[in-house]
Length: 215
Image 1 (cartoon, one colour):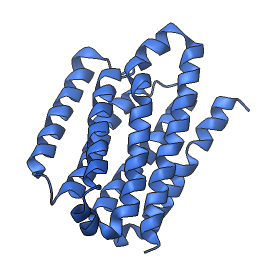
Image 2: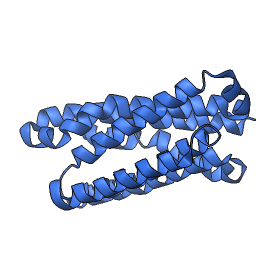
Image 3: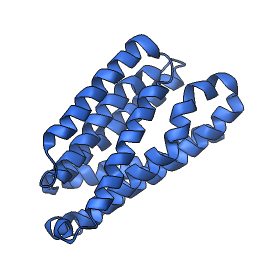
Image 4: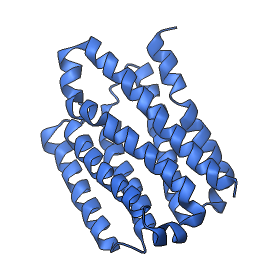
């Protein structure tokens, strides 16, 4: 079996584990974890739809153009709910609104839906890196740790997964379209690295959901 096919199955294992935890515990989750559950569900839909289209030799890049703004909305809501007591929610919603508009314009006028939308994905990555680093900084505050006591372990794991994925993948996202045109071999290498950090992300999210389940 081709190694790419094997890896495409392996990188879905943590995602399916996260989905199983969501299915079992969604009603028990805090509002923050319910929002992350939406992100997990969205990722499952896009991953399996993408694989099906690829198996049928159909261009699946348009799914990424849909996933980028919708995933950003989900993750922004996660951070907005987490920051709720410490940050004016309008700030997050302004960021979300501006990014969604930018992403739509990018798909309409700059990067065709049949190509890799590296610009929007790169901007999303930078914003999520800022969100995640801000949360880690916020969790250094004892008052915040006391308020988020029941969620603390889950937040650290989930936030770590998001930071590792988007920080590690930033260069791949930015040069993604260039790599697909320049060198198929280099694109394969970057794709393997992306699969690895994708596994790390959903492993961290799964652990975060499991940690809450134990309480």
